[in-house]
Length: 319
Ligand code: FBP
Image (cartoon, rainbow, N blue to C red; front, side):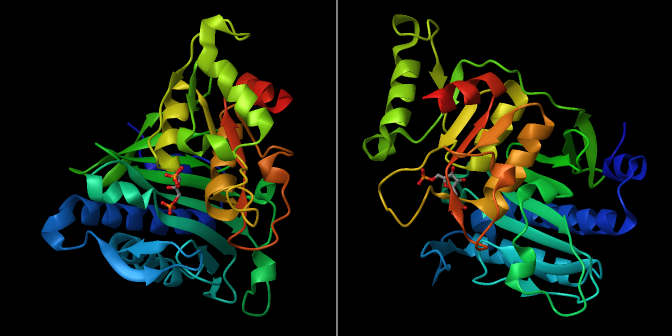
């Protein structure tokens, strides 16, 4: 069976990008080990701080952020990092060639209930003669050279694209390597499964209300088929389900807070997931445009997200 380094070696992935991917995924193995320790290591619960977005940080948010930051800084190919848990971008090596944006622990409200969480990452190639600044990092998602996530579930899985399809790897603890277990993932164009946080319903636009109402009416409505609903409450888990068996995921724009056009962050949630979905034959849009075409204006920018089965995303956007 092939492992991650075999797959990278047989692809045209540049050596320095391989180095960045190796450091990132090896650090995720260490995060996975820390998560398995849970309460035994005294690492659950709140850290007592807020991040730049006003969200309370869990101890494991901070621990996994520090682990990734330290490891990536020690990798000469890394030019700068951006993280959900860092207020600003952090320049690393001026002559490094890669930017990495990451959410060190997506779905962290799941940590305390021992449910799925994951690390999401997005990688860009960018060089310069001086330490990187935020403006260097504001590159549209279509320029990503690699994107993926490590899912910490019953098994630890790596899902990765370097722009040539999507592969899934399962961590083998006996060998301490990621083994290729699903090659060239494809998301079916049609689906009967949707994922959305229904508790926000009253804040949605009329079009999202109408679209979801028709899914709920099922065979008794215009769609003429019944839909099922699933919600992991961690985007990484919901996207993983879609890559495994199809579906549509929505975190739409709502009017809860006019300053926030959606909840999810463009640079380290929407963009990497959009690249994975498109590479797997699916689609990823906001309510107005393809996510990968968005010109970022800030590192922690938020966007509305509709992603998954191509025909179902089109159907949703037609509302
Ligand atoms: P964190 O990165 O802070 O965990 O937030 C992101 C997220 O957990 C997504 O993964 C998920 O889809 C969403 O928030 C769920 O939030 P809510 O429960 O507020 O709908």
